[in-house]
Length: 269
Image (cartoon, rainbow, N blue to C red; front, side, top):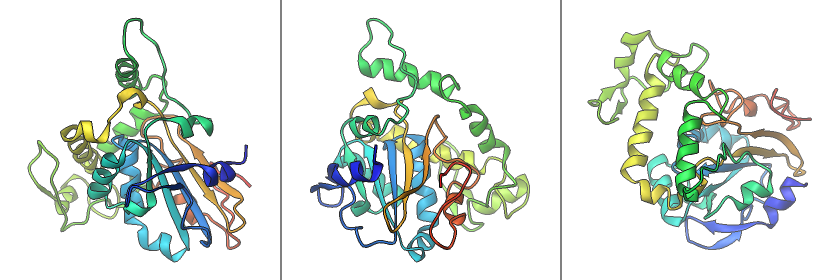
């Protein structure tokens, strides 16, 4: 299976203008191509991954990396997602099903089939089990890391930034200094950002999730060099498992050698 060929030949709807085009349209001349297969656009992982990419947007641009993402949803889902996360609409494509994810053999998530339930209801049940760590290894540990803090991770909220995460009152970033200091991910800092994401999605559920049947589907990250060889991949196996290093999900880009190879522990030669 040549992943780049599949992506090059797959057409999806672009969020910016609604055009149906090959996913890699417009980045043919780029030095590197970073392609994200996102789960549902209302998924924790999709929103959090977009946050990290926005945070490092200048570095990605300076490295000549073109980004394309495909998420499960429709154009309205994509527009809401981009408006909230700041992800560029011309880099996001949407598909109504998990057909491309399955073509690339990505993890569909827990898929218990309870008799008498619709596909959507089964997906809700399976999602609840996955949130409890069943069929989703590492999820609970990652949830706890969000509350506990992480000395290996960077500070996530600037001191003068104000975070609104209902039902909490508006919180200034400097508040988290009282939980442990500054310059690293403080206790409750990541959990607060995740609460904000959850509030956003639940307040606009039908927009983000037009078809709940694909709630458990996981995504992947693929990085291609100038010759369009696959030099890094990560296939998600869990909720809140969109990166090999969740403390700093874009670490694999920093580990790229001068000739463009990425040799992270989750990557490949």
